[in-house]
Length: 77
Image (cartoon, rainbow, N blue to C red; front, top):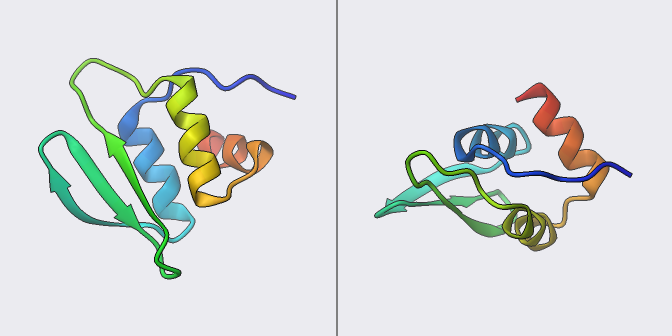
């Protein structure tokens, strides 16, 4: 099992868009994404900072994505 490290927010958004999420709006430094099933998630975009592993894991749980699927998406993003 691979460890999940910090992820660049733009790369994370790009990976989520590949599985059907789309940007609905942006509130300050947070982008709100939603998919066709109505699952919503929020990605913080702070200049020069990556999304920490704990938040990445919480987002994965929120959207129902397994670790291996997520890592595969990130490789291709």
